[in-house]
Image (cartoon, rainbow, N blue to C red):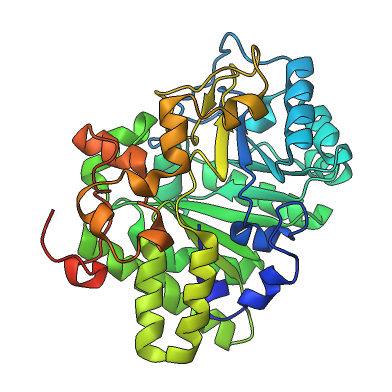
Length: 397
């Protein structure tokens, strides 16, 4: 997760994170990525069921009942363990979490335990009444997925009207006083709508947007050929930076982040270095605090059936199941070979990643994407769009 507004527009300084001691339990949510202890933010795919059928869904969700979903009591036990473990945030995801009948009860249990609770949703099921209930249980944030403007989004989501229903859900959250933001997964089908998404942020006064790079998992693995090439990615990242700067300079700042490609951090730093060497020093310090990709360390995933994964995309390798063993034990058990290597993956990456000058900033980027393309999880991430010269690599690997 790269905070474009934080880094490029200077809305966060290194001293802001240092003031809190860089401990997850003490940091406000907008500074969590700079935590030193990297206690995991846990994505709980609390249901697989979804009322839409998105072309890039990593969980292959559909509108049907799936067997073996964790019960309410099992969900409460998971939350209790995460609270004791010190996980700062639980993110209820899916499928579509609003389809889980006990979501409000589980979210209330999390917030009452002292955890921050957020949801990732398609927004279509958030009525005025549901929004008020989400506010009442203390939900910190609602992230609504919009993968383009009306026509593009509806095609992605497999249903005409999905865009308008999502906007209605956003407005209902705003009226209830819940912080709401957008989530946008970039690919060739929707890159042309990025400018329109920025217009929407301004028009609807939405304070936050996360632009996700495509990860090749679930139904998203069928879109590999539709991922942006390296030059297209550079143009898109520049557009995101430029539009963020424009809003900031016009006195309408938004929190803008890119997610799932830590090459963005290096790319942004090199741009700032050309423009403002003094600011670049602070950007580099913040990126070093961030530490790059944190799958298996600072972010983890629990599936609807209790399986534990390094992140929500790495669903083919489970470290264990919370029905048989607490998440806290599974997450800290480095006798599991892959878990051990992910905790120190900078020692294991190969090729350009292993030789890269910026390894401490990027941490080898997304291993699951490298594995999907090369069948070698330690190979270079094919989505790294930086040149050998920018990486300080002496040869092509």
